[in-house]
Image (cartoon, rainbow, N blue to C red):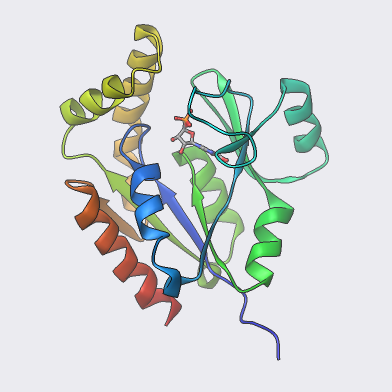
Length: 191
Ligand code: 5GP
C-alpha cells in the first residue's frame, strides 16, 4: 500500500507580488492534494494574521534554537526578520502523500533547490507586471513604514534578477489567470 510521497512545490517571488493570494486560490483545487507549509518567523503578526495558521510567530531565541537543532529545511533573513520552514512538518505532510507548497523568498528557495533532489520538487517564480505595480500592491497593504517599504522594493529589484533558476516563471497579471497557470503546472508534474 503506502501513498506515493508528495511533491515539494517552491513558490517564490518578491514580497508583495501576491504569492499568498494566488496560493490560496490554487489550494481550493482539492484534486491537487495540496498542503501549505506554515513557516516560522520572528516578525510581529499583522492585524489579520493568526498564529499557527499564517505563521508560527516565535522569539529570536526560539528561532535560533530551531536552527541549532537542525529543525529548519531552510531559513533566511528578510528585511530585519527571520523566516524558516519547519523540516518535520513538511516531511510528515509529504509522507502522507500531500504536495506541499513552500511560499518563500529567494534565498530560502535557493537552499531548497540545492538540498532537495530534482525529482522531488518543482519551483515557480511569480513576477509582477512591473516594479511600479509591485509598489502599488505593497502600499495598498498599509502594514509597513516607508523605510521598510523602500527596503522591500530594493530587495524585489534584486530578486527579479534570479528568475532563471526556477523551473517556471508565472506572471501575476490577474490572480485568477496566474492561479490557473500554476494549477496546470502542478497537474502536469503530479501526473
Ligand atoms: P512577509 O513578512 O511579507 O510575510 O514575508 C516576507 C517574505 O518572506 C515573503 O517573500 C515571504 O514569502 C517570505 N517567507 C515566508 N516564509 C518564509 C520561510 O519560511 N522561508 C523563507 N526563506 N522565506 C519565507
